[in-house]
Image (tube, rainbow, N blue to C red; front, side, top):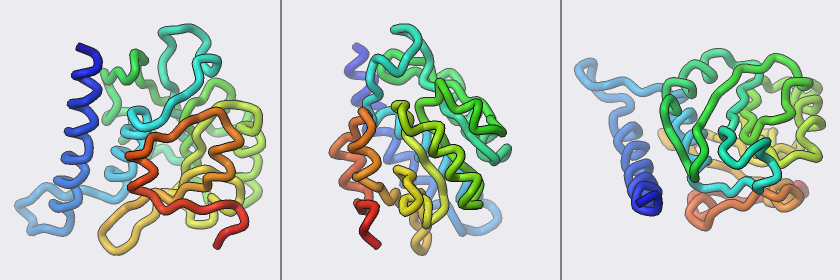
Length: 188
C-alpha cells in the first residue's frame, strides 16, 4: 500500500507542478502562483526523488528535516506545502534557521541568501553531513552547492552539481536527473 501511495505521489506531483505553471500569468480570475510557491513545491518533491542514507536520521522514524536559511517567506510557504505529509516513511518538517550552527540535523537545506561569504559558511557546515543543499542563486553550484533552482522564461528547473552530490551519500533518482541540467564544479 505504501508503494501505491509513493507511485501516486510520483504521478500526481508533476501534474500539480504543471498545473501551477500553466496557471501563472493568467487573467485576474485565475489562481496566481508565484515563483517562490513553485520552488517550494520543487523542494517538497525532492523528498520523493532523493534517497537519504539511514545514518542521517536520529531514529528510524525521524522526520525529514527541511531547513530554510535566511528566507522567512520560503519557510512559511514550504511549511504549508509539507504540512501532514509523509514520504518514504518519514514525516516532513520545516524549520527556519538563521545561523550555520543550526545546520546539523538538516536533510534538505535551502539557502535563501546570495552573499558568497554567508553561503560558504552554511556549506561548510554540511561538508560532512548527508544534506541536500539548494538555493535559487545561479552561482550556488559553482560555490559548492548541490542544486540551484533557476528560472528560464516561465519555467523553473534544477541545475545540479553532480560533483557535490557524488561526494555526499545522497542518491538522486533518474526522474529528477532527467528534469535537471547537470554540471560539475569545473563546468560553466
